[in-house]
Image (cartoon, rainbow, N blue to C red; front, side, top):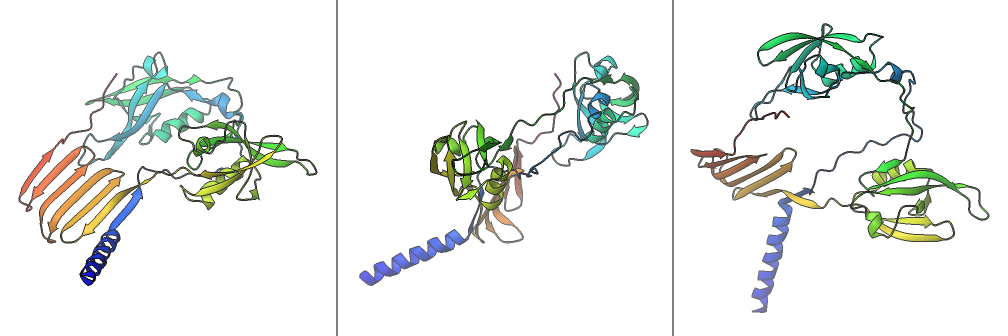
Length: 321
C-alpha cells in the first residue's frame, strides 16, 4: 500500500512538473520601456526657437484606413482636433479633414506639420491642400506666433516604474564629512512602493544597498538598470538628524499566463499588445477540433475548420465632437 502511495505521489509530482514546464508567464500588465536621461541636460538648446514658433491650432494624426482587418496608412494627416477660433478654425478646416500638403510639401506624418510650426523661417502664411470626403480644396492659413515663453526649467527627475516617485538632487552636510549628494523625494505617484515602506515626501535617500548616490538621476538609473521590478532594495535615509535603513520592494506588475501548451490536447496563447487570446483543442496540424481566437473586440470560433462563427466584428469609426 505504501509503495502504491509513493508511486501515485511521484506520478503526481512528475505530472505537475511537466505541466509547469508547458506554461509560460508574462507581466500581468504592459510595462513600458524607460529611456534614462543624462545627468546634465539642456531643455532648450535654441533659446530663440520659442519666439519663432507658430501655432496652427490643430491636432493631427496618421491617416489610417477605417478597417480592423487591413489597417493601412494613407496619404495625408487626419485632423483630430481644431482649436476654437484658432488659425485652422478661421481657415475653415474641420475635424475629420485630411491635410494632403502645406505650401506644396506632402504631409504624410504629423511630424511634418510640427516642423513647419517650429521652423517657419519667418513665413506665417501657408496654403493647405485639404480633402474632405471626396472634395479637395485649398485653405489659406495664417499661423499665429507664440511669443514670450519663459525658458524651460527642470522641476524634478521622475521614476514612473520602479518606485513611482519623483526626486530632486540635494546636497547635505554630515558631521565630519564634506557635502554629499542625496535624492530628495518630492512626489509620490499612486501605488508607489515607497508609501508601503513608510517613505514620504521630503525624505532624503542617501544610498541604495550601501552604495552612495551621485544625484536623483543616478538613483533612478540604478534602480531601473541594475534591478528587476519586484526586487527588494535597501534604502539608506536621512531626515536631517539621523540615518535610517528601510527595505523597499520595487513595484511589481505581477504576472499572467501567456501560453499553455499540451500538444495535441490544447494550446492556449494570450498577449496584451494587441489584446489577443487564442485556444485550440485537439490540434492535428491541418485542423483543430475546436479553435477560438479573440483580437481586441472581435471573437472567432471554428469547429473542425468547417463551421466558422465570428461576432463583435466592426470598423474603426472616428467620432466628431
